[in-house]
Length: 360
Image 1 (cartoon, rainbow, N blue to C red):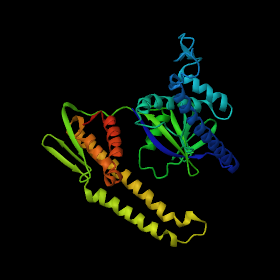
Image 2: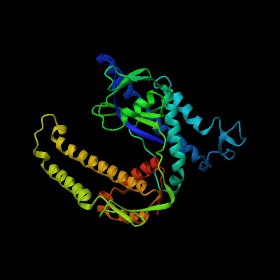
Image 3: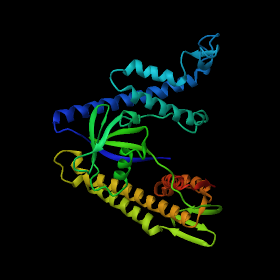
Image 4: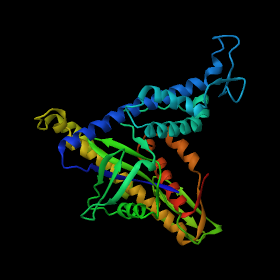
């Protein structure tokens, strides 16, 4: 399976001019990726709808295949190659084509996966923003090595020198990077992301699934709710993970603090415009997001640990779809019950542990 780790990067140079030029280059690439992404989905959508253009000419051929492979085809290339050649014509020489190729491949996969929902009106066509992450293949990463202080790693990406900034890393990032350096693990197609002037590597790493002794006959039943974020049962063994006071009440307290800060923001000292006045408000908004994410990670980890302890090979989320439909009708539940994010974290950790998840 593939996991993703977000790692902060610094331009590995003491020359500020080199750092400035590298940052400018990255922002230029990000802008091109933003334009290219919307160009890709627009072309794919038009190609998919070409059968509806019956008013163009009576003898138009309506098969979206390569003309060399099918006499009724209207394309000179494959579907994926058409958008790649469009990008090549517009951006070749301005951005690494490895980046364009990976962007084209990933967005076409998303489009093919979601296109049925487009025709049914269940989803709208994806719209990509200017802060889109920039994809690249693992083959363009070179010279991965330890820095002289043995605390970080340096490497080259599209000939730009980078080094990691792990800080007081309490996660597994350094261990994973060391295993990539020694060849134990493989780096897959990953992304670069620019956020508020900082550079981040969204490293996709291929790892082996955890090996646990699981019994296919044992099924764990879990229920997600507001009262107890998770209640799980395996046979006679039952456990409530989290409680209303710990999760919901704390979250509502943070929201109440945000509301008070909104009222008082007009009286805060300015100095340099909006940013200083709104600093405390922005900090609290980020605080709520971090608090919820951390709690959901803890709850999902406890759930999977409970399943592994009792050797449950299958995890059943009981009546989850019905609960989600009810939550959509209740504004309070929709805002404060993060069921979708919790489900995502449960699915990810269950896959890593080799547990099958069934949503009822």
